[in-house]
Image 1: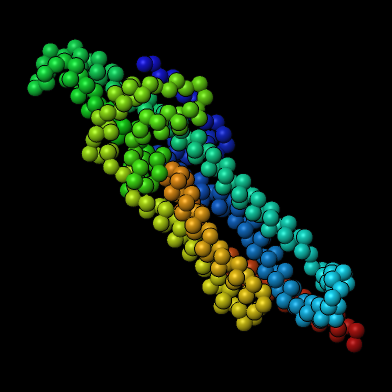
Image 2 (image 1 turned 180 degrees about the vertical axis):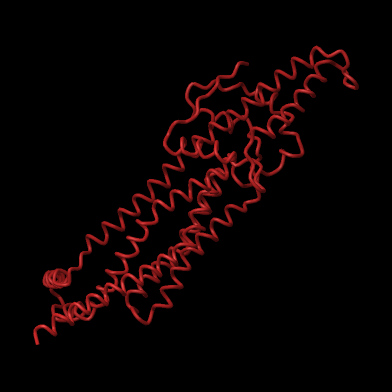
Amino acid sequence: MDLLMVAQPTGMWESILFWLESWVGNYAIAIILITLLIKIVLLPFDFLNKYITKKNGIKQAEMQPELTKIKERYAGNSDMVNKKTMELYKSKNYSIGGMCGIMLGYMAVTMVVFFTLLGALNNVSYYKMYTEYEAVSTAYHQEYDVAMNATDIGEYETIEAYATAKAGEKTIEVYDKAKTGFLWIKNIWRPDTSASPIMDYKTFSTNVDHLKDVEVPTEAEYNQVMDALMKSDQYSGWNGYYILCVLAALATFGSTYINTLIQKIKRKRNSTILQTAEQTNKGMNIIMPIIMGLFTLFYTASFGLYILTSSLFAMATSPIIGIFVDKIVAKNAKKELMKHKNSYDRNY
């Protein structure tokens, strides 16, 4: 069967990934690099989000006694409570909408990057799966045709058996070069699980259907070409050992737990605000690792590398951002205090 030369995906993330791979020579390392680039670009937005949250948290703690008085004074009159609360917020220059807007904006950007990159890596995975088969199939048929003209078939009973064996050996050699392995993972375009690095026909045809203008081989053709690979000791076992799934879950837990731990350390200074944040983070400490673990489990190892790298980056940078945020907030608070002090001194 004549295979069609499938075109590379041309999306933004795909193009960046192909460019990085041409530079470093390995898709796994290219994925790690593109993840680091994304996280570095988003770092200022992460900083701004944490800064605004911290600043508004301090204001809310300062207003808490007055908010309590308003609720006690106008108990049973929700309209008046809301009115007086809004007046207090305005007098203190406290904006719930502004804080929520920044938080939602940062979350929206993060989610857009997450899902668009997921789609891009899926597209690249479909493309690489087909090109791997394309290379193996071409090698198989070329070697088979050459072997069919051999005069010495050795211990083989028929020329067809000899040609099939020689072609099978060639497919293993070519696949070794065509696939993208990384550390313990045999092929990053397959999940880091007990799944075989060599797809069965149903999985292959389903994935290749996502590509445009590509002719899917028949099941008989596919099985003939991939038979030696499917039976080989090297590629008949697991593609991975669920290591990415476990590491991604642990790294995600670590990144959220560190934030909770930092909040506990600061608890005496802002007990009400931090207790509320702690309750939120307790849920996040459970939910987010499960979600990231599942994404890593059900998608390719290529996306698992993105999740793991992102989580490790967050775990490393979150405390550092927190330190800088605290210093800037404290510096601004000191300036504000000196401003009021100077104003008071001029009046007297």
